[in-house]
Image 1: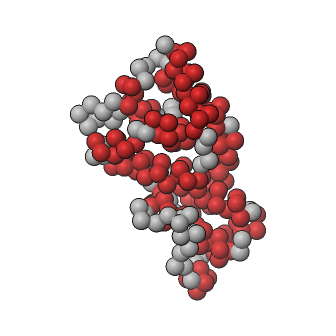
Image 2: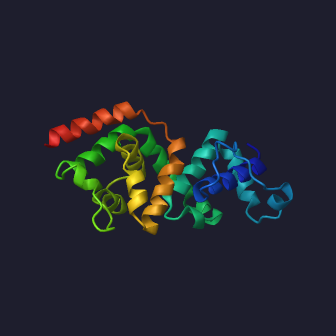
Length: 199
């Protein structure tokens, strides 16, 4: 990927993770960026160096891992990626490479001592327990996403939780889903086994 293409990839993925109307896959990563605007940027040298050190797939993965790992993708600026991006990317790769193991570990630590249905219960607009566990870093975004693919809790949360914290996480789950290849059947089996053993 050429430096300008890397810059366009960054912009289109930023749009993907921050705008409801933009879909990276649907628009094939297109953005309105111009070569002129790119060469006016002070950080263009980072893009030039970065594009030489990564394959096309790694460029996409790097930006995805950074947008899903930060608190607010809309406020994530390129300077932060320069400093912390590689660490986030490495951690993301470790998580995704051992995702079924991490899912099982997180599910076991959270669900075995609690009633399954109660984890998703919303009481008077308060955060449900599953969301609290995520905010306390006991459950990763990947596990939240997988659980939604299995039990479909997100639609109910979206309807009942008028809450900026949840809205941000909900959008991350929706936007991240197309980048995470999940065999739902396998994860359903893991979840069922953990729940059955915990009863």
